[in-house]
Each structure stands twice: as structure tokens, then as C-alpha cells.
Length: 424
Image (cartoon, rainbow, N blue to C red):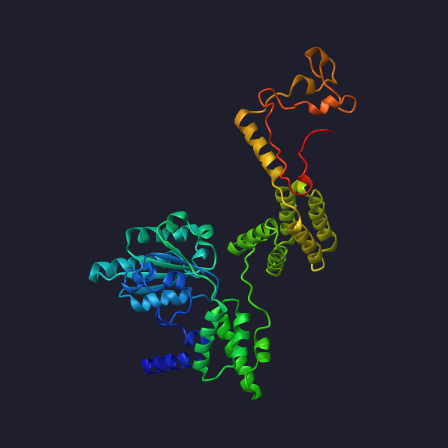
């Protein structure tokens, strides 16, 4: 009787499961996207099809196929497949998997694959418990994470795994997934509805299918055909892939800085918007602009630093959301400003000299002569006060042994277009 109930429950669960679960791909041919790592003839595809998958860490945003790929490996491999979630698993659970893997291998030579979801949630002790099994080949580990594994996974474990980065699906790939979902629901989707869902999915197949299912249920409850308004109602907020402490944080801020440095105000404003919408600390954004104003604009436009500092001050006085205007104004100004890294190169070169040679004494003429006995030591002797004697502007003020050295080389851009001579 128990088996009958279990079979019935399994059947009904398959019928009532969420749409993403019902249309989950079962083979590599059914998997949409990720051609950069799973194309015909690729190393990873051949390894999976040849039943020799390596230990790997699948890294990517939600809804791009990490769990699906692990289950496809489970479907195609002859190995025993075990699954743990790092959210709830303990070290004892890991040891249990290792023990069962050892027993299988000893009894009949069967291999074991362990799928560990959210591997970044495993602490150091849990990851260390896995290491001997992975290192010896006792089991094949497939970890999945939305976080950058280079930040979150122990170096020893990471070095024994292949890191596979999965990318967000394109709108066209998401549309293919939506078509599969529509066929499961038995409906015909207008092209504009498919496009609306794909735009809002943010490259997330799971989100697209969930939006499709909810939109269809809403339309059916109304007795109306599925329209774009149902999609807008079902997906009120586009999913944002942004993590203030992880990969997206570093990638987006890097793109923001490089867009301003490269003179692209449109891209700078876009990445600024992405950070603000993603919940980034606006003070962090303001600090990065202040740094860039000196590092990448410098004296080609000295006002750039004033603008960046003013935006940071405005942020403290006004706060968000209004301060987005101040931050955007500064970002656009910095992007459009003439560029020079002459200031940055000057201080980097000078500090390198100091680290290499130590701090050399200034020439005697430049040393402090205000205290009693300084004159007797030769301090200040021969100093030319430039306001009284213009020859003072031509003096090389560097220490002996460095005279003639040049650290600041004007870029020739903007207000650094002069020859940089010290003529007062």
C-alpha cells in the first residue's frame, strides 16, 4: 500500500511541480545556452558524454543551468549520484558520503559523484573534509555557486576542480526556453509576449518560466488571451544580478571606472544606475570617482576633483534618491573630461624611488633654517627666494643624486597642454 501511495504521489508531484521543474532538460542536447563550454567537441562535453566528468565548480548567476547540468551528468553517468545542500549539510554528512563512496568502490568498483549546491556556504572545515576524497579520486565533486569561487572556495579544493563559468542566457536563448514552457502548457504565445518575458528575465531561464506560468494562470483566471499586461503584472521587478560583496560588485565597479576613464558617459551612467539599483553603497561610488578624478583626469582638468568631491558632499547632505543626480552629473563630467594619468605616474614613480633608495636628504639650501644653530650647519645657505629672485624657479630642488630626474610629465591634454616648465 505504501508503494502505491508513493507512486501516486510521485505522479501527482510531476503534474503539479512548477513549470521550470517540469521542463528541466534531461540531456546536453536539450540544454539551452552555455555553448562556450558545451559546444560539440568541447572538452567538457566530451568528458561528460564519455562518462568521465572531472571534479568541477559550476559558477554563474541564478537560472543559467548549474543544477540542470549536474543532473544531466547524473542521467548520463554510470556512477552513483549523491546530492547535498551546503545550507543544511554538516561535516558528518560529508563523511557519510565519503564512506559510502569507499564502500561502492571496494564492493563493485562503482564511482560516486557528489553534487554540492551552494558550495560557497560550506565553511573551511566542511571544505577540508571533502578534500581527501576529491584529491584521491574517491569521488567526483560537482559544486554549484552563484558566488565567485576564487573568493569563496578554499584554494586547495579549488586547485583540484575545473572552474566552469556559466553565462546569463541571451534573450534569444531565453525565448527558446519560453517556447518549451509554452508547449508544456499547451498554449500559443504571441511573439510580443515572448519578447516581453525574455526582456524581463535578465538571462534567467527559471525566472522566465515562472513569469510565463504566472502570466498564463492570471490570463486563464480572467478568461482572456495571454497579453503583455499579464507579463507586466507577473514580473513587476526585473531580477538584478548584483552582490555588494561578490563578483558583480567588482565587475560592475570595474566597468564603471573604465567607462569614465575611456570617455564613455553613456556607459558610465548605465553602470552607475546598475550599482544604485543593486543596492551598492553610494559612498563607495563617490569615493571611486574622487580617486579617478586625480588618477585619470588629474591636471588635464583640475576642476574634475572639485566636481567629484562636491558630489560626495552633496550625497551626505541630500542622500538618495535625490543624490543620484549629483553622482550622475559627476560621472558624466569625469567621463567627458580630458584625461591624464601624469599625476598618478608622478607619485608612483617618486614613491618607487623612495622605496628603492630610501629618503635622501634635501639640498642644504632647502633645509629648515629657522631654529638656533641651523645657519651654522649650513641650512638655508644659498637659497634663492623665487618671488625676489626669478632664478629660484630654475633651481633643481631634488636631493643630490636625483637632480635632473623627472617624475611629472604633462600629458599634453587639456590644461596639461603646456610644457610644464617651472617659470612661476
